[in-house]
Length: 496
Image (cartoon, rainbow, N blue to C red):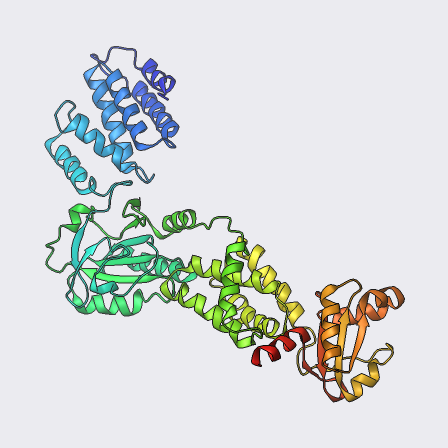
């Protein structure tokens, strides 16, 4: 909508003849109202600002008043700290000042304005990032922006989904760069964004450039890819194409090669990346992921070993994080977590314990968002707590359950079950067919008859899912746990 009310509020003040001496008090009030007007436009897109500013200037019929308003508007948008406002200043130069329709005041001021426009018009927000050819440290030509799928020698062999790219122009002698570069490096290491960084050295000292690459900007994050380029002969024209009249100068380019941010510092870059890379509300453990893991684990046959879980997790990492795709890694490993929650059997359970420690609980650099904590880390911590109960090598406690202490002394199978459980019935039938000597503990009856003993067993063993079968040696030392006798019978049949 046209902000007619805002324009009128400025022009009402100006309803006087400026042919005479301009009253300084009135001009000061005009400037104040203009500042309020600029504030009212802050959230509007560039085209709306362009139209509003044109309308404001056109509404002033007096030549001197029009010039004052035009210069005030131009000065505001050229110096604005709001990203993208420089596009309005360039529009004003092209529309009002270059043609001479409104005077800038002096030839030097007009020249400065035209240079500002030429050095900035090619790299405005929303435009395709200009293509410029630079050199890598080996003297090979590389075109920027370096987008996914490029055949450049710098990224030969790199694959994966298109990524955001940070384009960072710097100089090793620049005081501001000496502050900004370590801040940028720390951000990339701490947040582990899946981004590419094209760092362009604007100087000509090859030794200083090498030292800077190896020390000042040695990014350690496994998710960030850094490409180092320069133009020692100043032959590419990057200065004008990207408006590099001073350093540091930083752009954010989206996966399609469109400029998403310009004139950034590290704090502003962090805000943009957090916005653009915020994960969708992903729901783990869907039907498609279940079918995928069923196929992956089917190659191991009926009896899955603990190391097989690690192998699948490693395969997922090779196809995601190892290629710089952190988001895919999180989704794949998160889906695997939810898949393992529902799986029974010794191999799956013991493998899950290793998986939790190696791929989730020890990777706070990856699982670092509130959503991760809620859906993945919290779930993994709960499972780890259950799997940590009664580990192999621990000694089971004594109880007053009939037959318990005798079985504990000589060793054997302890079978925890519940009433009405078909899986429990199938496991009991398998035990009978194997002629195993086992002690069956019905937790339903135990909770009714001896609730204190039931609570002690729940504290010591992972009885979150029944049946739960363990094998002990002499003196009650646990040899195996989460045993499935049905699985064992199927495995024997598979071997035959």
